[in-house]
Image 1 (tube, one colour):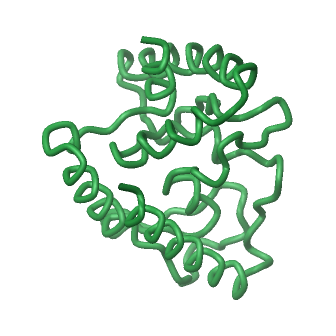
Image 2 (cartoon, helix red, strand yellow):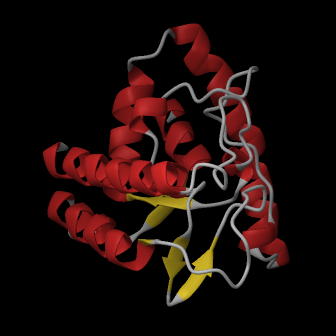
Length: 179
């Protein structure tokens, strides 16, 4: 079920590595930074299933701690939605971060996490990490997220035509394990 997703992730990782190799001084990502891990975002159904598969393989103690963090994050997500806050300005700590700001399911991380440190394009508008060295007004190669999100939607609908059109925050995905 995950072969196409893993191939997509491989392509994305190759594209981001290429950008990083040609613009190394602008990429400020490093282990423990975790700025991207505080961005509020949701994931496709196929990514949700992939995250759950990786999550279920973790030790019970690690899962329990992540579920505690997921409860906090879910509450913040609901508050954000209720207040109609700007999702792009909302900061919610990902429940998959450990105490050292390391992702506990790094190899299964979704597209948003894989592309955060390089320039991306969404609906014709460029985006970069606020901590990066990419300069405004300068042209850089970008990862076109609209195309990637369409692929994720198509893969999700292959898995479940009805649910495949929805998206979820990471916290709610993890909390589904408690039900």
